Image (tube, rainbow, N blue to C red; front, side, top):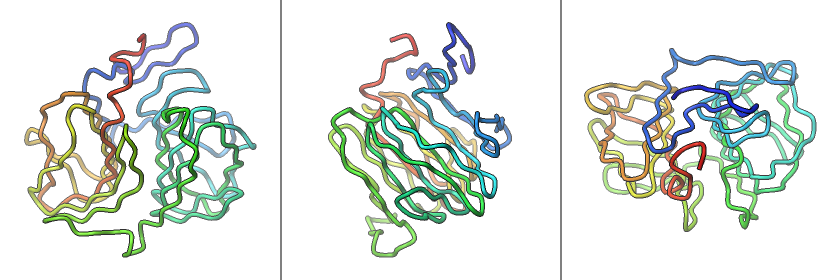
Length: 233
């Protein structure tokens, strides 16, 4: 089920055993508890504190009070400039804040970010900052370009630039998640444009390809192997 609520727990795309897809025309912007901050909930298990994947939009001069992320936080800046006590991060920056880290995020000019909350292993301790606009962050592998963002025994995160018809490769036993940043992804003859989010479960045999104008995407793989098959696991 796409959405349901039970015992004050919000469940959105909460069955990790089935594919989940959200396209830009399906975005449903929901106000957060903080004025000027809205979000599109892509998947969510929990209340205001949750295991969640979202696209979040900050209006100019908006902020969140200082808070802790017990399960960690992963951010990719899609537009504008995202800021906290550690610095100012324009479009293209990747940030990873480990479990139990604290910060007070804000944006002077406004920003849009892709955010994953509560999805890190408790032993993770490193703060990660990667400027994907820097050419030295990228390497060419065959027909594609790759920018490594994070890698561990349980997940791999990167940006990928693929030419038309190139297949998106991943370890199917650990699941896959992509956010289309430019061009389009193609699956079963359907094109998914910029802003589309796709999550394929563990063991999926679906084939993803770059569209006719190529594909640039955020891609995470392996991370669903340790997630329960459904929201009640």
